[in-house]
Length: 221
Image (cartoon, rainbow, N blue to C red; front, side, top):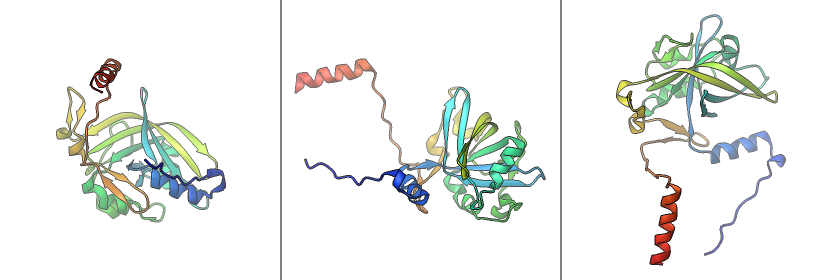
C-alpha cells in the first residue's frame, strides 16, 4: 500500500489569517454557542461563536474564544461579560440556524440582535442575561476566568450554574440527553455547517475485552 503524502505547514511562518483558515478547515465540526449577554444599560446582545466547547465537569466549565474588533476594542459579548460577569450559552439546532446567522451580522454596538432576528427570550434564573426561547438547550454561566491571548483575543471560561433542556430531550432520572432530538448543528470551514443526525455508536472496549479479542484473533489467524 502506497503511503499518503502530507503537506507541511510551519505555523511560525504563517500569517494569522492563514493559520485561521487551516484551523477552522481542519478542526471540524465545532459546536456553536449562541451567547446572550446584557449590557450595563440593559440591552440584550446575542452573538454566535464556534471557538467553543466544554472543558470540565467538576467544576462545570465552558470555554468561549472571543476575538476583538480590528481596532482591538471589545465586542459586545466580551464587554458585557466583563461588566456583568455573566452570560447564557444557547445551543443552536437546525431550526435556529437562520436566526443564529442574523445574530452574526455586524450591527452597530447597542443593537439588539434578538430583535433583529425575531427571537423571544426567557428571563435568566441564575444570571441576569436571558436565554433564547427557541433554543433547545441553554447554559447559564458565571465568569470563572478570562485568559488574554495577546491583544486580539481572549478565552472566557464560564462556570455553569444551570442548564435548561426541553423536557422531551432529557430523561431527568438517568440524565440521558436525546442527541438526535437535540438536532444541534456544527461549524465547518468557510460558510459551511454540518448537521448531527448521522451518528454511530463505538463502545470503548475494556482491557479484558481487548485482550480476549486479540487472543481469539490469534487462535483463528
